[in-house]
Image (tube, rainbow, N blue to C red):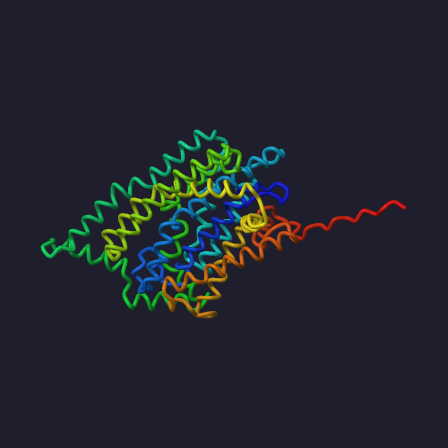
Length: 420
């Protein structure tokens, strides 16, 4: 999300454009139905073969990988912006922290007014920390990223897996009463009651209702608590992005053969394990003691693997250029607007004040809006950038961070008069 039109790096823009489109494929569920369905499909709107097929496709090819890719690109952009500030003799820390403060403001508006699934607050907070690492060499950044991701994933293996096993023991008829009570509580948390479903629906009757719900009790702290939740994973992804940028991997500087190897190895391994996890989940009819370990613990370390596989594949194909990838690059240059714009479209479709479709559709039916929204992204981004320097929200972010309005419309070329 950085740089002027003349300074853009084509591969970064294409990857970012595809990443923001991929994120929508998963986020649409969180916009259209109760929050629990986002994490455990049978919780709501999950009845037909089409619902299961759509979950499986997203699980195998999208879920987690494109958020990781978007976070990796954020780290790369952070390094690009700060490096160029240093090269031009500016105070890099002032530029960076002004950008993060403005992003934090956008994230708060996004979360409290529009949707619980905001990631911008997390990016802004983690970005403020990641700045301290941008000068490191690629090898050190890679090592720091591995350590960070280790801290993100190992506790789940050490704590979550034994807890899931213990809860499973509590489902047996001869289990001690305390274990049975714990198992019942765990099931209640992942399977909402009719009262909870109705309460959730009321929270989406209007923007005012959502604002009240998001600013009360624990909900008001969720964006900030993400710093200590999935924030360590985001931090690891950002460090990977810094390393990928500095090493030339994300800018397309590596030999094509290297990208082919990375794409083949990473995607083959990722898709194989993801497909097996989807298979065993479907076979077990989403038994939480099968679904949760596989999709919420065991496969987490593959997010970065799959993300780099996708990045390598996109670079391999996109380096050939062409009008199609020019469209994806334009989506990437307006990724901030496309991300927030997706939420705005979701609000118009699903909230009670507007389309009123919240909680009315199944998972598969909800996903049918995604191709339409992808088409909108591809249709508007390029023509807009032919006339303007930035996307609407990119312009607002930059203007706020710099403390003055930035030139929005592109200057018209001055006609050259022929000599008489």
